[in-house]
Amino acid sequence: MTHTTIDDLLADAYVPTTSPAAFDVGAALRRLAADTTQSAPPPDMARAAQAGQRLNVVSRWILNGPGSAAHVDRLAQDPEQGSQFAEGEMDVDGALVFACLLHLTDHPESAQFWWQLAAGAGKRAAAYCLHLHHLKLGEAREARHWYHQLTQSMSTPSSAPPDDAFIEGLEAVARYVRTHPVGSTANAPTGGLEGEVDRLASHSEGSACVIVRRPDRRLAAQLHRFTARRH
Image (cartoon, one colour):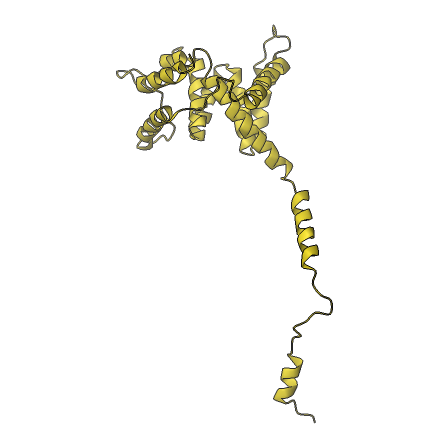
C-alpha cells in the first residue's frame, strides 16, 4: 500500500509558468485588427440606420417646405375649441408637417400617430415616412404594409406611374439634401421650436393619452419664425 504525501500532491498540482512556444504578441494584435476590419454590421442593422438617416432628411425637407407654417397654422387648435376635429376640418398637409416636426424633436410615437392621420387622409408622403419609420425600428411587417399602401392602395389610375415616380422623387430629394447640407434649406428645428413641442408634450403627459396633442397658435407662430429665417 502506498501513501501519498503532501509533497506528492504539491508536485501534481504544479502549474508551469512558461509555455513550450513563446506567445507572439504582434501576430495576435494583427489577427485582432484583421477580425475587426472584416466584421460588418448585419444587413438589417445597416438597413435600419439608412432608413433613419433618410427619414431625418425627408422630415427636414418637409418641415422647411413652402407653406409648411401656414398648414400647421390651419391645423392649430383655437382656445375655445376642443381637441377633436370636425369632419373635413383637419389640414392634412399640416398633420404631415407636424408629424415630421415631432419626429425631429424626438417624439416618435406621436410622430407615428400624426403620420397615420395624414396617410389615412391620402397623403402619400406620410405613408413613405411611416415606411421609413418602421424600417428604422426593425419592424419589417409594418414597413411592408406602408410600402404597399404607398405603391398600391394610394395609387390613382390617372398617375403614370404613381409609385416609382413618387418614391424616386422623394429619394432624389433625400440624396440631394444629404449631400448639399449647406446649400439646402432643410434646416433642423431650432431650440425655440423644440421648446414649443416639449411644452405641448408636457401638457399631454398629465392626460390618459401620451400622444402630443394638436398644435396651438404659439407653436404655429414659432414655426413661422423658423421658416422666415430662410428669406
